[in-house]
Image (cartoon, rainbow, N blue to C red):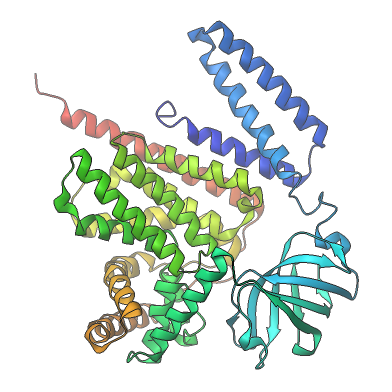
Length: 479
């Protein structure tokens, strides 16, 4: 199997190098020596072009990626970067920050992420999470605002809690592409808010189309979480994938000839990146859009490239650009979910029944993300399968109608959208009220998480191999 997907072990090797370097087990010179030796030995084996050297060459290439991952991380690792803000901050300090997202309201505060520019007039790097006390000043802050503040910071957790008398807005970025996209996103958000859709359902429409969860009612948020479909309220791979499939269905009449594939693929790419712009180029959406763009381009070119290779290529490109993404929960969930679905493709293709395919996709994505979910959130929702089979098909309709309603907020789209959202609301409420809908306080050690991930990966590989052999035997002609 690995011969068909050579980029998968390379991506995994890169992740191993980043993780080991982040743990600080080995000094930097060891990684440099490892890279030099593996690259030199691999180059020597390539020179001989002997088929017997393929396995050692493969191992040396994997070792090279491990060393590359480690060396790529070291300059960006907060513990080794002397200009990272955690090494410069005092108690208290003067910080200059630039908001990297528009603050969203919580129960007692406004939450946002910020890039640190200076600490006590010294140039600094890194990001932190900012919690602002609810007041009229915090409500006016937007992406790109530059704040100068004086406050105490929790350097271990990378969080800062401040009140309005501790910061001053000193600038605003309004010219960058991200800033323009965020301004468009806020404009579309106001369109939804001014439309005829009631507040409770408008919050779901905003979350699914713009990634804005600030208007979600607390009980509705809890319903989605306890039903095991919280991912529907986060614009990520599911929404981008649904959009790509919907556009593909809309233009199926273009056919599978080269010209039809290119035209349909171009329309899919246009829709995907327009959606990314509408959501303010949020990091999770950009990751998913890049990933599915590779799938679309591969289909446009008519090449039978395994999607696992494309997923691995996307992972390698993103980790080389920002190795700290490996420790980002959103990144972990996105890639593990898609990897699980791709590994379960033989099981999905066993039947053309939509109910079967939805169930297998849901199980595969949940299993693949289980280690991350347990280690991060310490919860599990046993009824996730029921909720996904019922609600996910509705999500495509909700997304399509929400996009139309966002651009044209009128009763024509509000009425069917309200009906579907009301149905999903009642269904999620019923599922969330089932006995044992959420299992809380699940504790799992890092070693347990790693073993669980390896076990699930081996399970996927085993099922994949068994089903592929079954399909091959099924297609063999009778003697």
